[in-house]
Length: 393
Image 1 (spheres, rainbow, N blue to C red):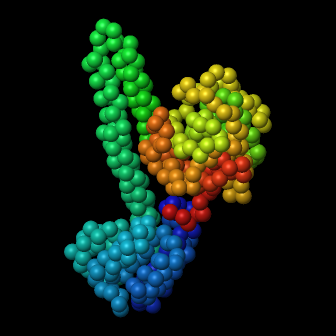
Image 2 (cartoon, rainbow, N blue to C red):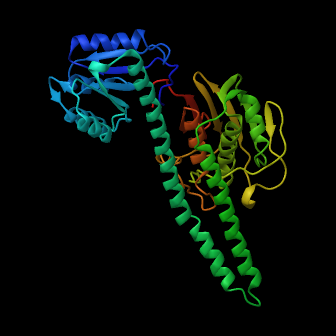
Image 3 (cartoon, one colour):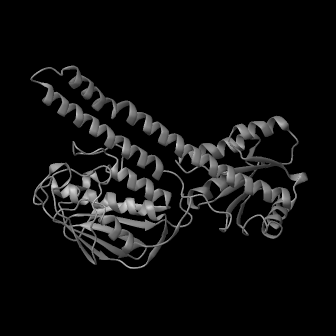
């Protein structure tokens, strides 16, 4: 994720003039402490050396001189961008440095993606500090906007395809309402409209959970897990809480994360006998149930969601060195499907919306965590949630 200004910034300085390099490092390390935390500066003198270093080291920002021994002018920035694109690396904010007063080149550099353009002869500590600070913030906003645009495209696809089908079913059935056929067609129309409501609910959840976090606090993982279990239909199933401690999170979104993982485990296991190797791996939004317990939570009475008969399972929330996991003793998720289950709309169950685990992924990413799926000790599904290293993007 993008570095915070309170973190130690990792800067790559590409400058072939030793005097200019010393001055820039002095400004960054000594004179800009009020603007951001003292950065760690890696200095190279050629573009080729910079490109090599970018392949092995993660940086937060590049200070790039356009007049190098092995590359001059706007081509220097173009070559840097081409290498990042070819490596499928996350985009980096770039502040261009030059000894030339050339407004046309400055404009072209900005058009090529540079965040700022500084003349070395006018470079002062305050100006450099402000350029770095603004470049990082603009880059952060650009990345946020890109993610929002990607979600809008996904939502547009969902609305145009997934919502259109049940709407067409409802219209068709209502058009055939006639004496003697009314009940059958109305039932089908109501079912189609119910599915549309479920899709809309999950779509709204996905939109909310993809936003950046506004407020986080220290929350007790065990308490949140137990609370979430009480909100999910879990007939004949048990919850084992084997985790202690807290995480910094949005309590509401963490609750929904647990709800969706619990529903996935319970409904995944209720669609077939546990000795079978079926393929229902994803379900939609949570449904409410009001019951909770202690270290082992028991499912409430009544039938499971969608009228299925459930074979009770045990879901375990346990601790890991760098996070926690949610595991079950159900039939598990085939290894061939584990890379796809977090995709928007992916579900091998005809009753699933394909949003449940996508919502989990959005919540995880909003917290700066990672989620992986593997096999539990009993052969069921195990979702591992871990903190990403500080320098991951």
